[in-house]
Length: 171
Image 1 (cartoon, one colour):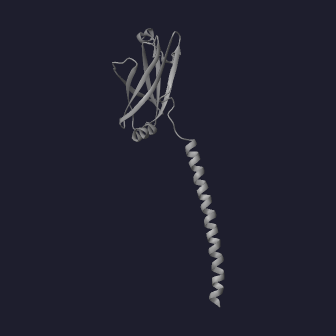
Image 2 (cartoon, helix red, strand yellow):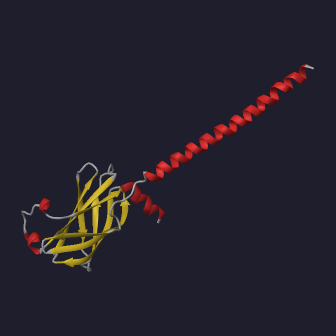
Image 3 (cartoon, rainbow, N blue to C red):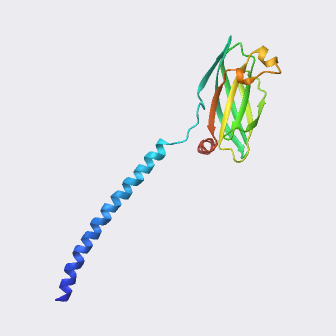
């Protein structure tokens, strides 16, 4: 008879444990979904990468896009600038800075096509973001050795290093 009483106690306890496990399981599942939604909504992205940007100044303008960023190693990134709609622009000046506003060395590689520029940026290993500033220069600006870049209209592209590396691996 004592075995029958213990059976009556254990059966409701097992049923309660099963119900609690389903309730707890549902709560854990819903919280993981909330995390997934917030992670997707705060996704890091590259700003103005592969976008056509227009820069207009007095009697000059240019449209350009920055694309094809590739990393050759941890400290060397190559990218292309495609120029379109050139109106009275003799050259462009490209300036790059990291997330701490430190200047990065930019080397432009000569190209047979004047509408296609290839640039290389030397990074430090701690760089997480790269800001690329593109300044269109008229012939007079290009020849002016004392030119103040802060007086020239420009556009900026902000690139996330880890996102570019991830895209390169996926491609």
